[in-house]
Image (cartoon, rainbow, N blue to C red; front, side, top):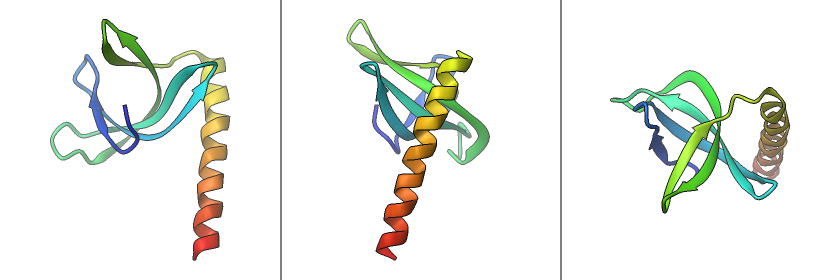
Length: 90
């Protein structure tokens, strides 16, 4: 899975991958749900866990509160770093 790509979960919901990180050798993504037809972002943001299942890449929505809190800190810091880079270039 790659940032800026849209993926479809087993329940046919689509998510745009906004950012990624690796925590304890597991890849996680910050994603926003998008409309199935127009692919316009909706107001539902999630954290996804990437895994390999029978040679296929799978994504699972994270619902563990402690893990979500840790990921929120990481992705917030990532955003701050990106904003710093942007402001330095403009």
